[in-house]
Image 1 (cartoon, rainbow, N blue to C red):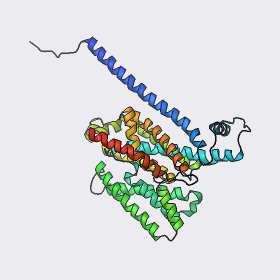
Image 2: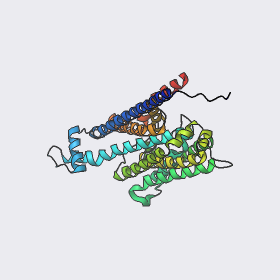
Image 3: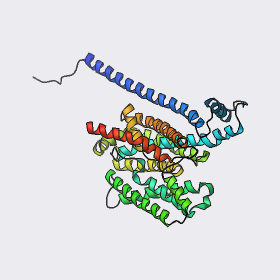
Image 4: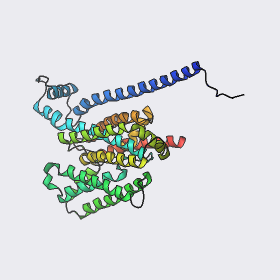
Length: 367
């Protein structure tokens, strides 16, 4: 008597399929709700943040000025020339830069935590921030790159970040294939060396004002925001988001493990190398114009995963929006808490981010 495989009844299979479709639909609606809500929050945040500062501007006036500047709404007599300059020249570039830098750091954090499979990974783990700081310190203290004019600081910082990337990959590739552990160790080592170089430059400089400027830059600031910086970081962030979303299935496989990624047709070492290059360039562009801003790339990815889960095509856009909103409001606190003096932005993000990290530690312990 021949045995035949037992199959489920057709009606049972249909029911399972319907439940799976309903599950997918519910997850899709849940993600769309978070994405739409955070997008609306960001749209509302930008004019509100532009109006806040040592000289407050009413939200209605901000909307009128932005409408006039952006879409040619006829000018009204409801605002002064000073308010127009404050809103359009000073604060709008700063708020927009905060949004794109926050999005870039959050996207980088999501990718890096997957690539090195470490929940404590952050964009500055690979020495990118340390390299940018070394380049910036060389310009501030010794005038390196002064021929670039107004872009000398950002240009030198970006060059330092790219140099750090190259050095990390060179160190990680010595004597074997580039793996997540090798990248992690190489990034930490290169970061410490470059921090030491920056500290030595501060020590060797005879300019107290320059040393103070370097220290303030190291802690992060959006005070140097302008249209060019916003455009460059926005373009870099958009490309990074598009590339990472295109690789989302591969990143999902890599998050499970290298063996799983290989079984699904992904080359782990190649994906890790290219993804790290894309992420490092985005972080380099962000750090070059904003200095060292910690905790955004560390905490925001975990918050995004709590909202929509760990699937990359869902978590990447949500993390970018959360990072953008978070950094804009952190900057509002930085420039208003002790007005007219400005707090370094990194202090604010650390004060806000540290409690979230403690909550994460408790959750990991409970798990």
